Image (tube, rainbow, N blue to C red):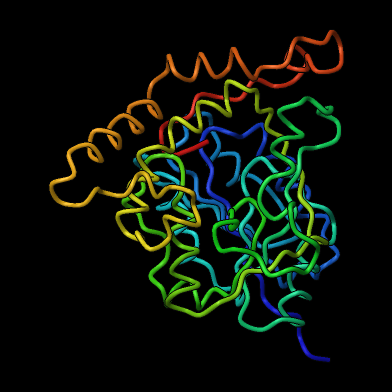
Length: 310
């Protein structure tokens, strides 16, 4: 009997020991053969005992804990994990996801059925967190707008539940570690996987993981603000992608176009201004509903994270 395909699960983490625990437990309950799974966790200089905890764990799969002695950000942490990995297929999972028992099997089978692809799984809010308005918004983004098995735009690639042959990551040079702040490091890699490696992106809806990290409207708006400058960095590297990102206005204006330059500076200033986001929040925030949407009083409070981690 042919041995199962080797799989490396790639997880960067920073000060999320409480959320990482159920992620690792769920990976120990997979239907895929445990002897063909390794889980590479890179602790990006946490100060909550994450690395010591990882070293003490006994798991049915091979657990490979690695620690950065200085915080380098998510792109660098994932690169460290990919370089240390030995599996044929890299499955990206975040440190606050609970994986369905067949998640790895679904990713492997999808690659058996489709060659030259990047598989994007379904990542949705854990049902026990309720159905707050902001959760519904987040769960309807990206590939969730598509039919299962559809070809996806590369911009929908996110690294909380996705897979690609590890050799392709190495071929295109891995994540760009100059993306130190939160956001768009996965999009930038996706563009190179499509343009340089010729891969297609597809929606593997059957591979499901649940997001355990509560995200409030404040969190979502803060992320949008944090990603403004990484978006400019992305556009500087891939200006031909501006239209599909609806970000044409952020491209540098033509030489001598003073009005265009002033408008671009205004957009960037608004995107990074807290007062602007306070006004947006006041307009779009739902009215409090007692009991059902007010979940934060009985859920873990996420730890403070540096610019490169969310």
